[in-house]
Figure 1 (cartoon, rainbow, N blue to C red):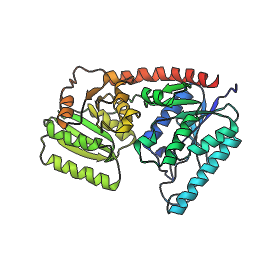
Figure 2 (spheres, helix red, strand yellow):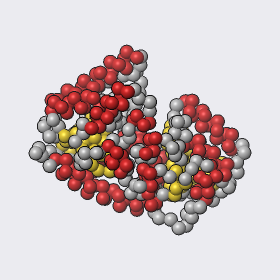
Figure 3 (cartoon, rainbow, N blue to C red):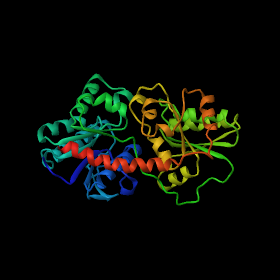
Figure 4 (tube, rainbow, N blue to C red):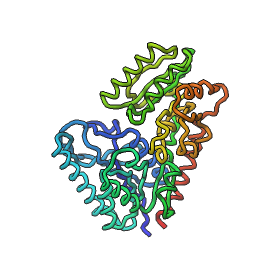
Length: 386
């Protein structure tokens, strides 16, 4: 079996630290890729991320250099840029062609290639694997057909892409049981187990209990709206802070709802928009409770893991979450404050029942998971290369 100390890791990855031109990316996906890459680095692997992110603005972009970031290298694949429909189609084929050629000419038989599951390049990966016979380690964060509308062809292709893998990284034990029916090598990593250090004077001293929702404003998921409306059932000692991202229409909808709630509630809601980097870290350290409010009956809840839960815990926050199997049956399920339905009164009651004087430091829980995961990754890689 091939021995290697280099691993290619494919995904839609970007970091603002990489500079201009900026690329479109999912912060949650990039954060998870950062963590997986860090566990590989700590196991003495040289990681190269191949990213297919498109530029934020129109225009052709070529990768003129290899970036060095967080202990690994990043190559941003050339792009024709976003714009009209024709350019988007051509860019899709260009990115996949470049990726295919890299895999064909720069991988070897039995070499491990890590891939963040995506419909955007899944077929290309599968075809290259059939030719070069590399070991495909597929990181499946969710089943896309559970979260978005997919055609019959896309559903079939997604299933084929997943089944083609030699090993898996899953965010939940449920997803492992559902997809890994052949009992291939696998590892469950719920999210990012990197604790944050409080280097600022961000602890709240204003006498209020600060509660935060940080995440998507997607109306289909509904979590932000439940978080805002919960203020109607909380006393004025609580403040709810809304951080996150969405379309212009979704942002306006969130701001409008906040105004309505503040006009009639003792507890007040504050809108902060998208905050990143150190500002985001400092802000979370000024809060005590994090909300993981979302639609409890949505199909994606059965398999995906809400990354915000671990983000809150990494900053020492207590987490209030709807009771879903993926979280309850996880390695951190015993440290979460669950509610059982989206009744606003029940969410508020769960928040009020948290005794902030008698709590576990959630950063200790995350730190312990980090140590265990680095060791598990070593064992996982050994099982893949056997």
